Amino acid sequence: MKRALTAIIFGASLIGLLSGCASSRLVNSDVTSFARWAPAPPAPGASYRFERLPSQQQPDARQPALEGLAQAALAKVGLQHNPQVAAFSVQVSATTQPILRPRLDAYGYPYGGGSSIFVGSGIGSGGGSIGFGIGVPLGGGSMDPPLYRRDVNLVIRELRGNTAVYETRAFSEDPWGDDGPVIATMLDAALRNFPVPPVGTRRISIEIPR
Image (cartoon, rainbow, N blue to C red):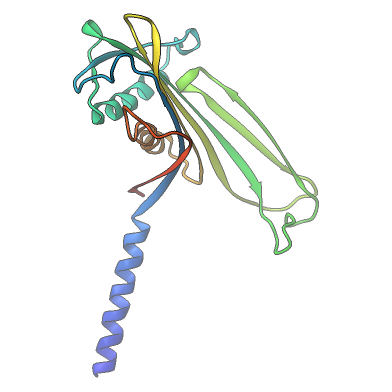
């Protein structure tokens, strides 16, 4: 009876542990940032406005949605969106490119024989870019779930001198297909250590709900 009870408790604990793991996921971003504040970084509460390139002026909701995600990330590091009294401008862009992958056997070859090629392209404007990837298995074969290759770029300019004072980029390649939560997390990663980032590229992993 004692052994059976122990087994039941162990099984319940294992199920709870597995359920907890399944309820979250890890977004890994490779982040590179550069700062050139003159004379000093902005104080908390500094105001900014968004700036758009001509290619980002398309009459759709993609760029405004991306700027909404950026606004939330910038608020976490102390910057406030206030176009009327802005001291800085922010330009943000993002691209997503799905990559289809042939399923490989134990020897590293695609099932069904042959090899595979990848053709990718991007269309759209700035933060509203949409990428298309086509994996072509030569000789047939099944496919693994796609990876999603994402790039997020954010540049801050001081309006008084029209000088770029902060630039940051986050890159990720993962299986998560939902752009919104992943890009929001990548923006948080891109702004990690703001306003004085470390030198070089660093891997930042952030856990979010599945």
